[in-house]
Length: 378
Image (cartoon, rainbow, N blue to C red; front, side, top):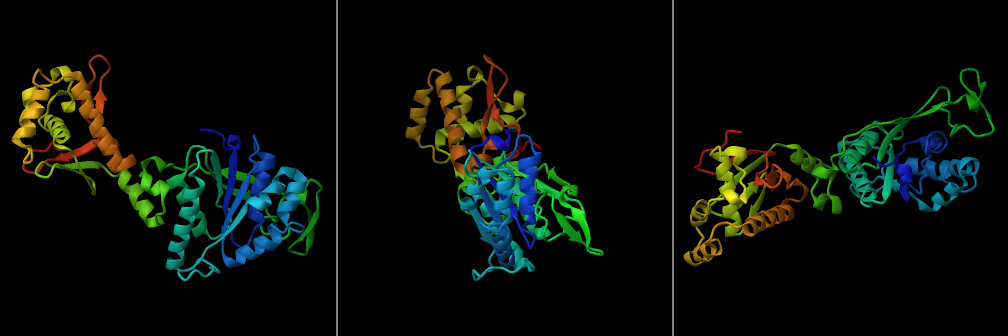
């Protein structure tokens, strides 16, 4: 996997509640403890109304905020990030800023917004996203992690940050400064030095499901629930129903209508598989029986006599390598256009190496049904 520090644009994306300290604690681990350091070029914080006010005053104030102090102490280049910082306040159904995420409706709106932020942040292949779930309610952290699982790429990372007591809950602790400071902690208002703080970044592995999402979800807006449903569909067993009467391929809940010549070719390969032909019905162009194909083509209800004559003439001397490969290429192009990244199990795929490469339906296709015809029992 590419290291996120190597990408030209680097986004630190975090959910934040009432403790903006998690941002500088995460930065400390990424900049001062990681090799190579991850220096963000942009900051995107998702929070509530109260969280936004605390972020504004405690973290992002250019004079008194902890972010400017951190940049001065460890990475002056980070001072430019203040201008590239987005504070994204979650909102209710009427567009009003949320004070907290406490209801099911609030949770779904937070899910939609977090998913959209992650989708947009991961759209540029030249960007790396480092997502932190250390702040905010547990629901917010879970949603951010889930969204990154849906949209994340190899260069993206997910992490949590751990801080030892008594610093983890101290309102004045944002990171260990180069010159130690004295803080006072309960019980008894006892003094502690900030160089006793230990900040540990936990890199959280996650499953990347992005490759199973159709392009329309990667390029446009979709609700969190819709995206999860699409991801679940991509992981479901691939099943196909072939309807010769309408020249339709029913791929899960989507339908694709092929031209007669291509539909007959696909149906021919499907029947070979259902009938138990060797290699799962896959066939080399030299082995292709032109009469067998023409019989399938002639059985289509809209294969008019004139069209049958033209098809028969085109392959009168037998099925050629060029004609065979054109059918495979055109079918796969149509399947890809209709199904996007869900197309894999429904493509015509090669089996074996050259010069004896055969082509047939994908072994990823777990069930094929042609109404009124025997199935393959899968």
